[in-house]
Length: 302
Ligand SMILES: C[S@@+](CC[C@H](N)C(=O)[O-])C[C@H]1O[C@@H](n2cnc3c(N)ncnc32)[C@H](O)[C@@H]1O
View 1: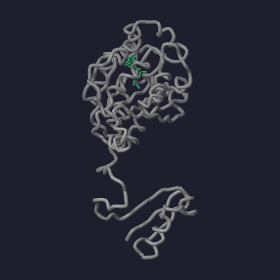
View 2 (view 1 turned 60 degrees about the vertical axis):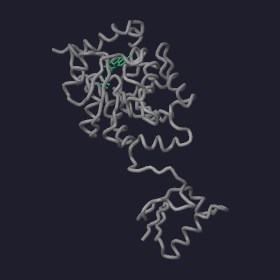
View 3 (view 1 turned 120 degrees about the horizontal axis):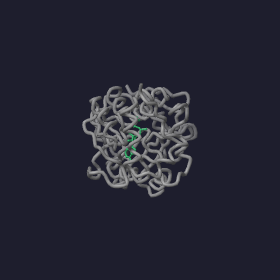
View 4 (view 1 turned 180 degrees about the horizontal axis):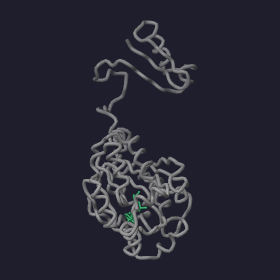
């Protein structure tokens, strides 16, 4: 009968914090060799891989993007990204060889690197990945602030870094972990922008947080928005140009959907002329107009 392993978290991580890296690692090696990690975490209602992969699918449209899975373990995140969402170019990194053997057997990673992430830099060069993802690996005695810094180094300018953690690790300062501090310093130094999605039922009924970091390192400050938009892969083409007063070098388009502040339509603003142009398009029958009920205005051009 498989040995039961309890998840390393809040109350029992301290005993691992004082151990050397390799000794900490024995925990996962044992779990995978003597127990059944995938089955155990499912029983413990650990939904991190599912939640973070779903989020990656929402924010990154490029299925060929080269993605680094940090603390890939037995490959639960990879399975979700590849089998459910069709991402194709995954590299996993984890120090536990037995875990990586299982990940390899699932056939979802192009490459697997057996290594700790942090405190030493990983072998790949700067900007080697389009994006990075991680679930359940940023916690005390695991990946920490130094790991995060190296992940930022490895991700291209404008690239996304999605990290799923237990919520209390976002809210608490834990000595020797430096994750919260590392995130804050990335944001205050404008190295990354940050959004946080809080999710319920992350693991064992506890809340989680999905950090969505965008790497601003090396993003051209004169055109940051385009660089970031490009890296997300939703646009076939991106033009660096003002819209008006000169015509854009594009074919006529059919449907135009514009969201803007309601006051700008209802009040009218000197020099803005938006309302007037909309009215003249409609009265000259150049366009038909359907006005959205709450927040948007929709203009249908014939
Ligand atoms: C709870 S498991 C999560 C594994 C996988 N991401 C998942 O969601 O099932 C934590 C993983 O982090 C790995 N790990 C611990 N310290 C690490 C470090 N410094 N760098 C990379 N991975 C680490 C462990 O080997 C283990 O596989």
